[in-house]
Amino acid sequence: MKFIHRLGYYLGGFSIGLIVLAFFLSGKKTSCSYGPEARVIKNINSKKLVYSQNAYSVLTQNTLDTTKLNAAIKHGNIIFSKSETRKEPCASYYLENTIDDKNVAITIENCDSIATVTHLKILE
Image (cartoon, rainbow, N blue to C red; front, side, top):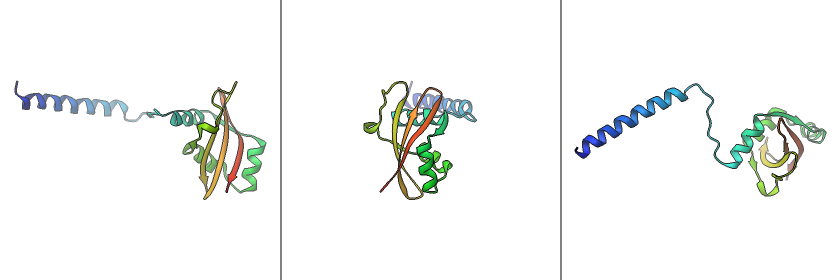
């Protein structure tokens, strides 16, 4: 079989596979969270988020909104060197992001069924 025929069969099968894959994955909430940071953020966002009294007071003092804080958590950067990932019974993660041009540091305690924002600090 000539090379051009083999290439034609390969490209034909590849294109059919792409069409089938696009058909099966369309309409579903599929995502690929391969990195450790993406997996942790996805895990935190899949749970009910509760705010401690300390975090809520910082929110009200700085006139920040919980929806903006949720967006900051969703797109935040986890600093694993400042996190306690092996802490029992709930791991504690340290995130940094910006809200309304303010740098914030967020500490989240990630338990089995609930995630709690324990500390919120406005960085300079």
